[in-house]
Image (spheres, rainbow, N blue to C red):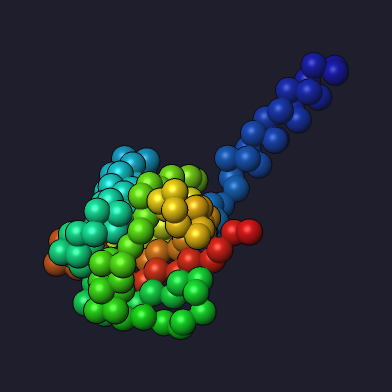
Length: 156
């Protein structure tokens, strides 16, 4: 008798779990597509920071959409692509450490990437390390993923 009750409960719980809708009622994306998107955008984020570290304005600009905007933690407000690309020349990032990169598909051609980055500056710099949380919106345009929006928040 007890065995039948436990078996019935197990079947009922299993059916409840299986019947649960995914978030938003939409089906979960297929794993291979997520892996491909994650890989492409992780590669792009690393290329973004390599270009910034190496003061490679062309490589950095190539990753940005023409209507790109950024909000950095310095309180200077929103910047357009041209302004951000010019900042590359003044970069003093000597190393960087990415942590917790996460890709959230928003549509077939848009995704939000979030991560934490710690930037290391030269030994003689007034500030040696800066840690920020980053949110980026990437859009696929003409077959290429371009960053459309960048926002950082300093971690203290």
